[in-house]
Length: 118
Image 1 (cartoon, helix red, strand yellow):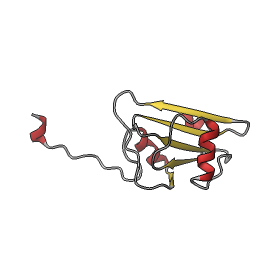
Image 2 (cartoon, rainbow, N blue to C red):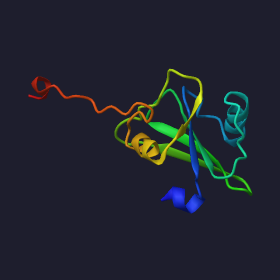
Image 3 (cartoon, rainbow, N blue to C red):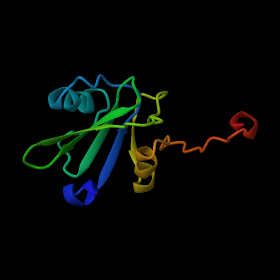
Image 4 (cartoon, one colour):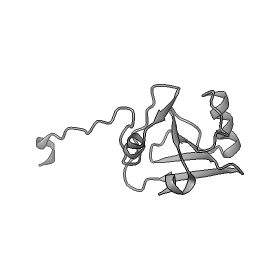
């Protein structure tokens, strides 16, 4: 998996929305200015989501340059925390929740009303 290949030790979620048209320099500036974090911290993956919740970007400093990641979910959407404007550290389990489409900070599986199925 990517975490093993890239040596990711920490995942930081940029809560709220970010303009995903931004590239490496724009996202690195957001990390420093808006969240007060160091974008050059090796092994830290910063994740961003735009207004549409079906795609996200990641920025990772590899020591010799940045790796820009982009993921588009073909079926479904991410449940991205929108209420806070802070960056949140994610555990491995929370990262897996996010990639499954659950809100990593508050993973709730929605109850299904059987009356609405039939």
